[in-house]
Length: 270
Ligand SMILES: [Zn+2]
Image 1 (cartoon, rainbow, N blue to C red):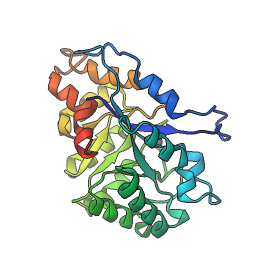
Image 2 (image 1 turned 45 degrees about the horizontal axis):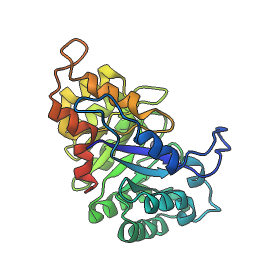
Image 3 (image 1 turned 180 degrees about the horizontal axis):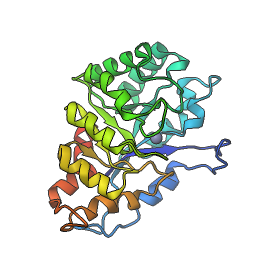
């Protein structure tokens, strides 16, 4: 099963970026493109979807309103899409967690995301972050944490947080890579903390190879960051690891499948 663990949906244009909407219909059309992946042609079977950043930065919208396009998308495509709740702690941690519990129970949401850059807070602001990791542990859902840009989303800043919650699964998004690459840093956090998974998307091919060699395929997950990144371009990097060196690392087909989706299907209980 191929599972894209990181997709943003919107029904409205993004005023900050000048982007047109990216709806569930757009996403499903991309997921259904047949990809020349071994064992294929293959489609992207499932995706974890969350709002664009803009709505989650607006204090005038309730958590429910921020996630309305996501809720409608997973109801329309219940067999393909699963919800991720993006919690802006500035808008109220307790209220956010109450909405998360409702969405998990009633709409099958399966992940919660922290975005220290978009929401402007330090991961060491533990009154913001500890309750989220504690609740995720209770709900048995992973926490997706944006990483890759200073000052708030440097992967090393996440280590005390994830180390203090060993029973909560944390996924470091983007392999620590945005305009700056902190992949070594992200890999080190995962080496130190068994509860940490690394997302491959945005990671450069040699850095993804290093991550797999450092922590094993069992804690690597595919997430494209669509529509910022194209899913197939990110899947292709994983597939290339099956080549012999120096291009690849002789990754086995079963390890490739684990990274492309089987690991995430287990974490999200798909
Ligand atoms: Zn994201």
